[in-house]
Image (cartoon, rainbow, N blue to C red; front, side, top):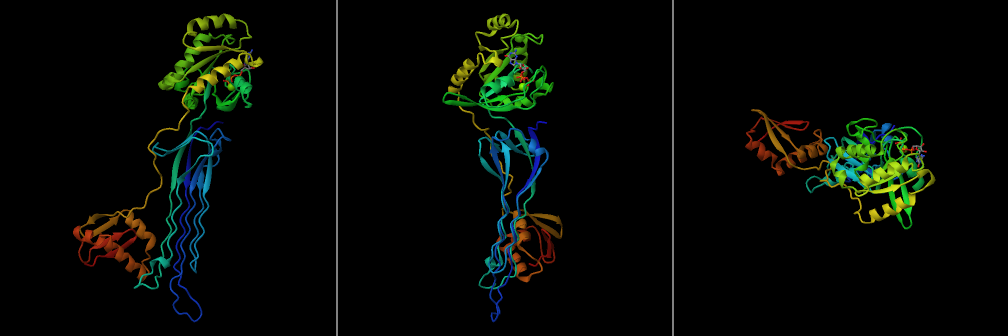
Length: 420
Ligand SMILES: Nc1nc2c(ncn2[C@@H]2O[C@H](COP(=O)(O)OP(=O)(O)OP(=O)(O)O)[C@@H](O)[C@H]2O)c(=O)[nH]1
Ligand SMILES: [Mg+2]
């Protein structure tokens, strides 16, 4: 199983409610409001790590919720903030929203990004004290957050991508030049997911990715399909490994052309990447003869390195060549995108919809804010509500829209008669 694209669901913590406590103490009849603020909900934070190189862990766990903030308490006690939830993803994970817009490119090891902010805590009644309202018996509710669906897509980041037919020796090469221990076997599709390794060559290091074998039609889904081609989009150099001995009765030149054709029909811009050819299995019969033919055709346009990977012959020359090529290439950079956020900013906009001659509905951000603050059973709270409607121009706008004495006005869950 190799998962490199997955849908998950994330939810930041709700904000805790503010408290509407009134101070009480022996011999003190009215100690005033002492309700503390609710705590902020936990954020959802993504962290990039090199210790994973698949999204397989999301096969089992798809729901991630950060902790809610606690409610405020008496005696001006603040509610505790909810704990953030850190979701670890492999380096190279691109996070998108449901519509496919990019939210984040988790490009560097250790990079952290807040993907969803926790809900703000509600303010305690203390904040609503005014000269005329000494003991507000209402407080604000915390912001309730919503669950969001996001798509994670892994696009491996490596300096060098190893490509080629199955069974040509790509994984063997990775195991020789890095500490990685990929599975090696004499059959096709031994490698089922990209393997990464770090090459150290004198004072230089670079990351090499062994991509599962490609076959004709891969760009249209044949074999393991083209999904792996996604993992060479973010490499700086391609090393095309060819079985130069033609040990499986195939012609190395047509192998090379066929795989190139698959790569470039997946993404034409991959033509811009430098490509080095490794002519592997030089120890086998017919290898030298095939190499001569290959060099005649492609020697002028490509660097061709003859190799017998199993005895490390030719490996040094490859590393020297790669180090040189990489030195002149710009480093990889994260994707360029217009960042979007899943968090809805609270705005105090409103609009008036005339539902009927006598029925008017107020909608918009202001209504959401009010619904967190207002408790209709409470007289103080209702007065506060009326004042906000007036101050924000809602009453005037209702009048302009045709509301008059006795018209019904709907604001969120609240319904009341308009009084001019
Ligand atoms: N004779 C010879 N055999 C080799 C050489 N390099 C690799 N092999 C053998 O070729 C077979 C395939 O090697 P792998 O490294 O698994 O090939 P791969 O390209 O990763 O194959 P897939 O993962 O299936 O795409 C193994 O049996 C290796 O031992 C070589 O230089 N000479
Ligand atoms: Mg392999």
